[in-house]
Image (cartoon, rainbow, N blue to C red; front, side, top):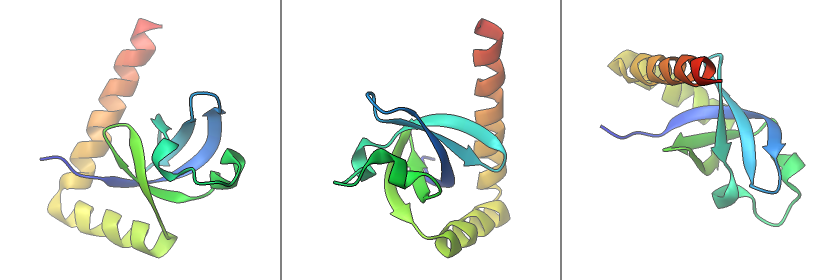
Length: 97
């Protein structure tokens, strides 16, 4: 099942490539923010909650919606699976470095 998961942008990691670091339940991952950048400078996205799918921030959401979505995903067991997968890929990437 493919799903979007909420995360919060903590920094713009590569403005040229439109990449930002997001935090999802304590796991940090780099995602592309091209779909949500708009006309404002990329730095204005720091702190924003976004819905992430396959490495892209697909839309901006407010904090209340993000928390409600995370709660629903947790109840369904989906959030844990997605976070576990993110942690596993983070460990694999770390081992390759």
